[in-house]
Length: 286
Image (cartoon, rainbow, N blue to C red; front, side, top):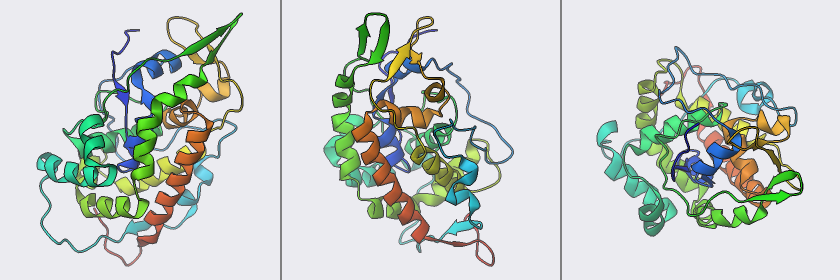
């Protein structure tokens, strides 16, 4: 399988998903988990369901967002017309920069087709594979560090420090402000969801599914053992290897970072739920 040169996993759960996924250097992920790269965007008649989660993870089917009655977002009244989706990079990039910091945005973010890239990335977090051609963040320096101890391979904990700049962005984002930006631009997120091939359903439903899947990610204790059956590294534990793409991201960044990211995702989820109401009798945000 061909190696990818310096492509960084990046995504935000709405912006934050990008920050969470930015914690991976994609070349390292490609070598570690052996994904087969697919270049085409998904096409489906309706919103997808997440694949089965590993035994240590909670099933999406049992997650609160899946059990609750259908909910829709309560969008704020528009203070100004939104740009078109394909002309939104300047306005949306300015909003992202206000959340993560102008310097961090200029250094780490790829400013083209931001909303489309974020929607596609979030969708793929809940899948077994995550194509990389649309990730919205730049590559982190350095390469995957692997420990070779006798006959065993393991992920070197020194890797975790490589993600410090991205964790700084995670800490800088206020969940309430993040959701406010998301709500302001939500019609464009929904349009991007349609353009990716999902003619039915709400992007926000998929977002909540993926957040729940990330929160159910395994939390490996001790050394993370690897195997290298061919060129690419994989997790030695079949349970970890069968996790979704987003869960593998969280396992990879280290236990302390994983716990911190999950705490922020819980805050984000709570902020989203505060701005939702039952779908019956309410106008849909299609």
